[in-house]
Amino acid sequence: MKGLTSLLLVALAVLSLTLVLGLKMKLEAKIGTLRTLKNKLFNSIFAFIDQKWSKNLTASTLLKQKLY
Image (cartoon, rainbow, N blue to C red; front, side, top):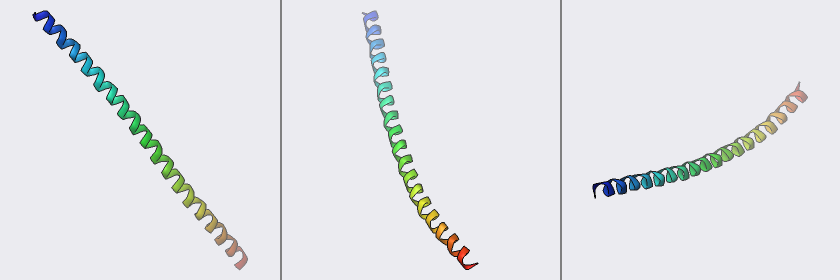
């Protein structure tokens, strides 16, 4: 009887560990997806700002060239 209880406890521990590791992997995948989305968002924001900045900078440079 004692051996059966030990065997059941080991099986329960293995099952619990498998479940926890599976949930951990799913959570890591979701975090990775969120990081990717965050990076894409920031990249597009910075690209937009950079595009506007370069247009203004070009206009400013051309204006300075005409003035001098």
